[in-house]
Image (cartoon, rainbow, N blue to C red; front, side, top):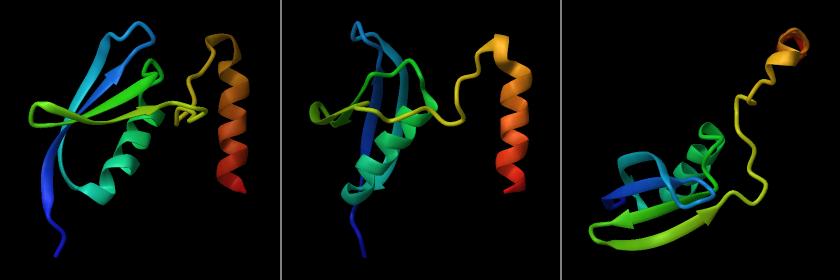
Amino acid sequence: MAYVETFTFVCLAPKQEATHVDIQTLTRDAVRAHAFGLLREHASAETIEVWREDAIVAAIDRDGVRTWPPVLDPSRTTMAADETRQDQSS
């Protein structure tokens, strides 16, 4: 049985402003996957700091991780909707 711990994930914008905080009880093996999921969800996050109690245990940079679902450009809403329909039919 895997040992779980409580971690605090802090999404940081480019100027080191916290834009989102997420507290999760996870195994150590699941920490990186959860951080990458947060990078996909939060377009403003450049880095995810992972804390356990009062110590930082990891800082995970975006390094090419794209947001999902993609942030839509309002000027391309129709085209983006068409692309989504095509992806779903494939």
